[in-house]
Length: 204
View 1 (spheres, rainbow, N blue to C red):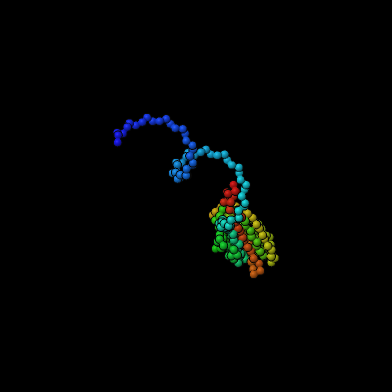
View 2 (view 1 turned 90 degrees about the horizontal axis):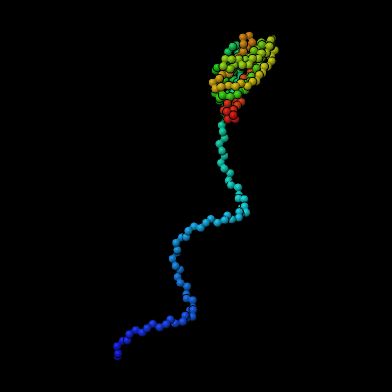
């Protein structure tokens, strides 16, 4: 066997062969990195309104504010009260807030505001001069001239503006104290808060 010869010179490139058949699909490659966020697109057309939903359950009842209260109605148990002193109406018809004091005969204002005061008196045997007094000042004066054994009635109603701490009562004058009561006749003194000042302040 002879010695290995020298490598030959490369030949010229051959002609391009025909396209071969498509090979089988390769395996899925790894997930690429997240791309840059694109620009916001144009707003789409507004859709049609949806159907009305069913009514929800009723909510809990709210708290009712407590309104200030002050009222009394009292009667007299003995006729012909002493003059120039607060008449002590000692028959309690209504005094839930205890703003009227039967021991003194005075109404004590604890809520500033406008109050309604009224009285309905039976008068017998002598005339009567009745005054509504507030803080020792006679705010209202009325009279009933009656003599003998006749019986009549005297009534009055007014509105007074009171401050907390004010006191209101009724008085008769000397020789004009014919306020009368019996098993069939009453003499009544009443009052109640119409509007408290705090409501006025809220409205203003």
